Length: 76
Image (cartoon, rainbow, N blue to C red; front, side):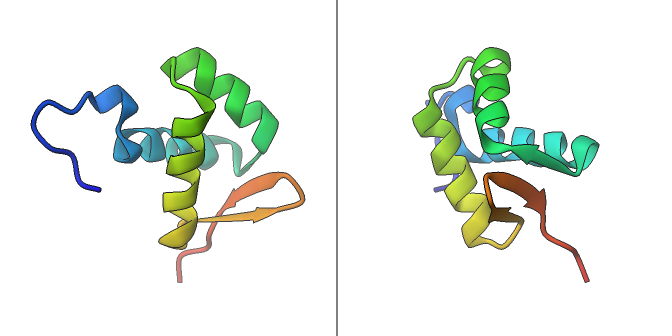
């Protein structure tokens, strides 16, 4: 899943994941629907790309998801 030559960074999972982490760092938590709206408007990416990035962040334990809220995972 690492970027390769010819890959548009705007639609790369790593780029979108970084955007999500930066947003969560500023707000501590965000409603998933609001994130979809904000991400679609600011990044001009589809919901599918946002979901892939959220899946990746969840798999690497960077975020938590509970009751439609996404939060940063605590670093210990």
